Amino acid sequence: MHRLQTMNSVVVANGKSRPLVARTCVALAIGMLLAPAWALDLRQAYEAAERNDASIRASRAAADSAREKLPQAKSQRLPNVSFNAGANRNNLRTSTDSIYGPVSYTTNYNSNNQVLQLRQPIYRPYVSALVSQAEAQVEDANASLERDEQSLVVRVSEAYFDALLARAQLDLIAAQKAAYAVQLAAAEKGFKAGTGVRTDIDEAQARVDMSRAQELEAAQNVEFTRRRMEVLVGKPVDALADLNVQGFKPAPPAPANLEDWIARAEETSPQLRALRAQFDAAKMEIEKAKAGHKPTLDAVAGWSRSDSDTVTSVNNVYNQKFIGVQLTVPLYAGGYVNSTVRQAVADSERAREAMEATRLDLGTKVHEQYRAMTEGVLRIAALEQAVRSAQQAVESSRKSFQAGARTTVDVLNAEQQRTTALRDLAQARYAYLLARIRLQSLAGQDRWASVDQANASLSK
Image 1: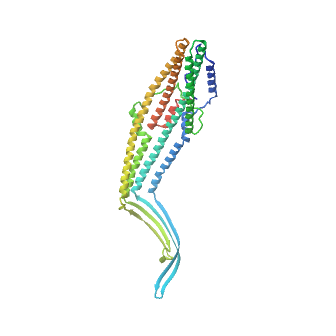
Image 2: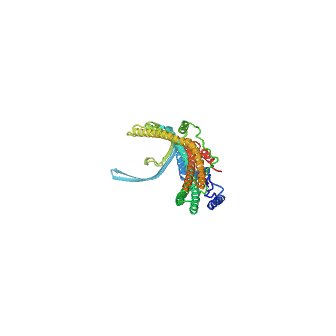
Image 3: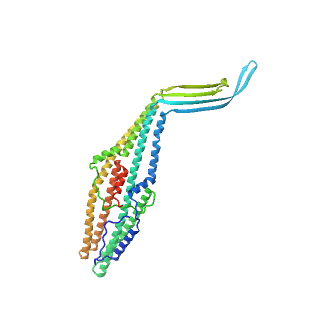
């Protein structure tokens, strides 16, 4: 369960902690004791999502289906054996004219035949192109599955860190509300003692009311992000391993050169690999279409047996064995082949342009995530300093308020500024982790290594 890393006791005008603060601390301590000792971390969440996410299961099924295209294509090169058999009962009625008038007679007989044939392709350009195309389609399926698995890493990470951020924001608002409540009590006490004004009470009360509304919204966001995680992992989620703030050390991307990342992405990105395979498959479609003008050559062998095959061969049995080659030469198909070639060429050009557009877009996305990482390091450092400064401002405002040099509004503004700085720092840390995961995903790096690297930043 997420807990704020920076918590200070709130002090009223007389310098003593209020009972409300004491009760809050006791409640937090009891909550920590009752909280589960085990929390779901990022790797466990990804492992569960791999097993339970419907989208990734559909992707695996699609890849399994596409892989069958290769053995189907290769089977066209192997011998084809067929057996045909037939049995008939024949009734033949014959009529003829004679000098005595019409003469007719009826013949009843049985006939049957059996044919066993083996055909071995020798030269079929269409089949060669079909096998090459199937190999490209299998590569496309494998790359597409890897792309979806990389996408799942990003989806799980986004849901995980969104849930942590929602929990952090709720805790920040709760702490801010407690500080506002203490300041309200101090303002009321000062007003009763004659040292304060009604405006201080109204201002503090307004802040307390606003924080209650914000707390309700934050609680709804916590529930939404938790539900989102449960849908991905396929089971209830009670607690998530939080960011280890003390051990979190953001670093710039390695390698540090943007061009190296773009070159790596263009070489190993699963999305680009899938498009290259689709382009190769489209080129093989051209070869398949051109094969419509080319001859084919098969070796043929077989055996046939016929019994009373015709009325003139009643009670005669014929056994025949044959072996030879069969050449088929296409001559004219009404322009169909030329049309399919033109269609395949157009499809190939479309696949090539789609691949080029994706390559350029990939470079832009890599640049975006690279900048998010490099600038995220600087932003986190700046916000850490801002949190320290805001904390010092809160302490100074409280002391000045006790001395009468500051008003309640000054203390409330300092509290709000500290809360804002803590919120922005939490957002910057999670944004950095997501940028690193997205960059590694775009570059096609090992997804498990990316998950483990991000998981190392969480509390054990």
